[in-house]
Amino acid sequence: MVAPPIRTVAVLGGGSWGTAFALLCGRHEAAVRLVCRTVEDADRIARDRANPNYLPGIHISEEIEITHVGDFGALAGVDLLALAIPSRVVADMAEHVAGAISEGTSVLSLTKGLDTRRGGRLSELWGAALGTDVPFAVLSGPNHAEEVAEHQPTAAVVAGDRELGQRLQGLLNGPDFRVYLNDDLVGVELCAAAKNVIAIAAGMSDGLGFGDNAKASLITRGLAEMTRLGRAYGATDATFRGLAGMGDLVGTCTSGHSRNRRVGELIANGMTGAEAEASIGQVAEGIWSVEWLLALADAVEVELPISTQVAAAVGGKPVAECMRDLMARAPAHEQ
Image (cartoon, rainbow, N blue to C red; front, side):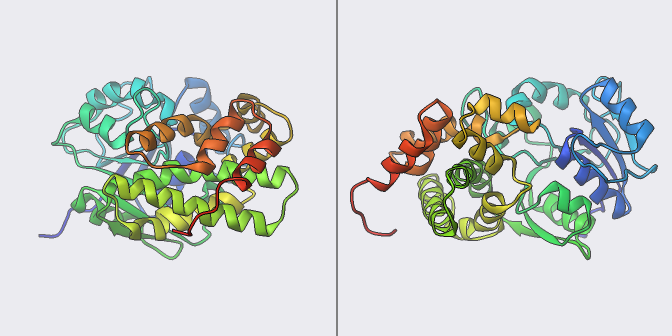
């Protein structure tokens, strides 16, 4: 039996990725509703047909409906609800979302982080709120919102409900976006959270004035510690070599669009983590995920040396000292 196509989409979250994903669905002929956080945000975007705080220079089609989360029925009556909200608000929003969606709606998480209250994966939090009858999946990969909005080609993986993944392939696959299925939900989610932490380290390297050698080493060893953590939780190594792992890690560690890399750079230049995030005006998930990532690692006795130093730097330790401590670790085999 062929899975029914996705024809109607609501995107919760009017930031850069939520807006870009709404545009992506719209140009693939879905009827799209962008659900913003406030009335003011919705009114401004609807009036100007632009979201300059997040995607400057990008036109938002008149065919995309713009509303806000307080609007009755904003999340109802659609085939797909895509969640593009910060990890730190998921716990507050989960019950509201579960009560607001209609029967037959599937849910897709676009958030790359961890539960900032309990430290688990976000699919666990959403599963508890939505129940087992609501098809749920996550989408991840090297998908900078700015480039997706500009129709630049990229690819992603979707993990979770298999039929929903196939329906998302039908909705999203096209000349500038390609979706692969992945059966490793745990691995995809851990990749999405951990790569942001490594990107902060890469930004710190940039902020200290180091070159390509240092960044390549951080990316490679960062991938190794991500993989160790995933393996301890039953994830497959292949996921960490794929789009959600290596693909997103490279993109996030090297791109000028990367919020987490930029935050690391600002921390190296003397800002606190909170000041750096405020300076860029957008959420840097790595700041919110790093302590919970370390807690997950401690629970299974996995060492994450780069992430440990990122947490220390976010907490105020001088970045140059963090880098020295990384380099002074005992000799080891590459693994």
